[in-house]
Image (cartoon, rainbow, N blue to C red; front, side, top):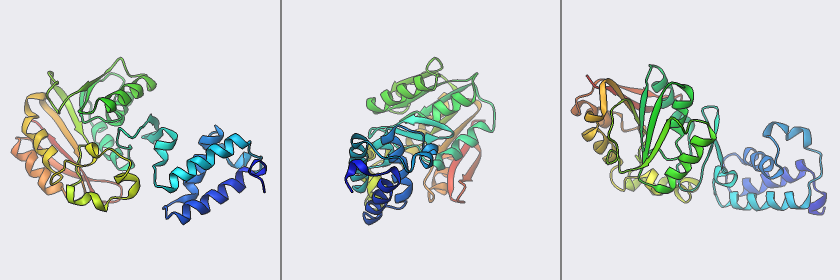
Length: 281
């Protein structure tokens, strides 16, 4: 059958087979998301148009996206969007993809009131901007070493309508931070250098290594944060960081060494250690 005569359903079936052959984990889901993007329709409407015949330009675009996905390029990079905590965020190859497990940090942060929040290594801004969107009276600052990441965070702040309450700054951790906060959050690079080869291709080949690994043992960013955090936290203020599943004990010890109290490790929905939370006396 000529491509221009293919239906949406037929094209997705062929694409699913191609992605399955490429060894991807969920080829049907990927094919659906990329078809919705190529056709310019909401994902929920795909069933309604499944028997529609595709225009040649839409089919060509869809096939090009499938070919790139078959090489492990993340779907979010192909569509330019990623959902996180009920909102869509712009993403590029310059920022880490927002992940569901990071929503554990959001829940922990929202468990208590806050008025000023600092996000260290903000990337796309998904943590900072979600917190500001959920707490309309709060203001915040996000810092990132990557100027390209800061530009993505700026776009997301505008898109979510919180740019008047969010300052995005290029900074190496606290270097360009001058105020105090009652909440400091971070999802720093925590993959050890010797673990990088074990990552899936869509992560290892396409996501920024600056946001994935410290190039060391996976703990150096926590050392830097906890060493300098005290002057930037208000009394009774909280520091909340995301960790790798095996890092709870080490990061907890750093929190205590920094003088933080009531330190606890919080698991994600899969039961893996995901968050360390501490409070300044």
